[in-house]
View 1 (cartoon, rainbow, N blue to C red):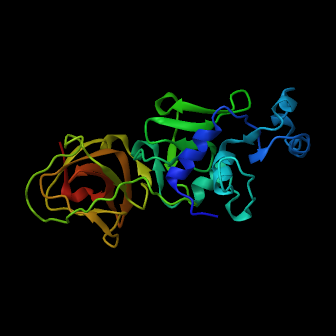
View 2: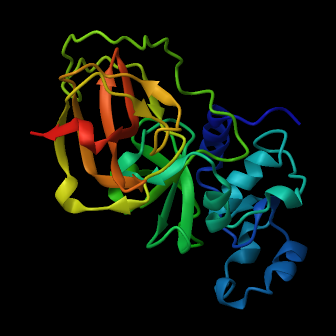
Length: 277
């Protein structure tokens, strides 16, 4: 089976729009035998229209993702793979690159989730890169395309079984120049986004705001001096924080965003070297 990618996931989900939602399915063809096997979920199979949907390709929410992973095309029969058989919660847990929706880089093919906690995720679907999501919303809706802003997504993640082929690469200089640069006010022609490999562990609303770097400061992939650097924003750079941070050795490392050399970065900067504006 070919390598699975973010762009492929979006394309697969797009083709499924208008098809039915069946709980516990991942791209199989609806039939009497499939219906019989799924009656082990009695609360999900109470309506009377299932027989009218026989012959159509069916998914549940996370099944829309597994259908792509396990199928050679948007219409071929899926081949079950136990190692990738995750619930919505399991898909988030398995992801290495993820975070709260306030840090969402809006890259095509990323997964977005609903849930009050990372251990209580209830729904997952696919962001298309253009302000929409594809989701198997429920039996009354089927697979639909909806506006990202119209729903209460809480978390995001890179699918752990897909390669991100939608983020454009960019060569960034780790300059130690003292030339000042701005954050979100920098040119809107930004062509790529890069997010730290670690996610923030804590939240404090009082930390929210714009900060300025006191020195040529490392933005890192995680909190602590041992973490790798992403860039070195020069002294005077403005960065934005939305209240998220991680404490390492008693020091707060703020999870901040900055647009630098036409790339939007989200990573960790030591609070000691930041001045709130």
